[in-house]
Image (cartoon, rainbow, N blue to C red; front, side):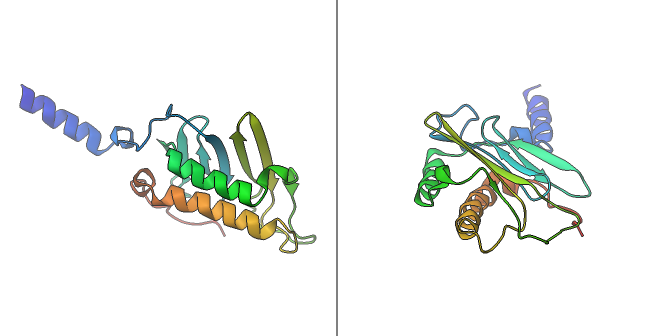
Length: 163
């Protein structure tokens, strides 16, 4: 009987992302909380403890996800270094630039010490903006952290693309 139960549990977990262990629990202590929507349907929401990956032709997939305190500190240090909390609420693309399909707007919400900063931007951001390079650095850091994690690596690859 125990062998049958063990086999059943193994089979059930083999096809389910929810059986995978996260390095931190969704209700783990947090220094900062982040909600970052990027690309078309990619999203990190540590308020809810989920990561969503856009699989393009196959829709989206979500998995439980939270940032370690070290990862939170790394992101916060970068946000403070670029003075993120003092930025305007909206960053626009260069005048006259249009995209189709348009992945915009992207947004980043960072909650730190009861201070919530909401930033919305339209891709591609105007490269003449003083915020362009720091925004690219900050968002690249967040994406690098996400994509380095086992939870992300276990997700299926996107099939197709946006043209």
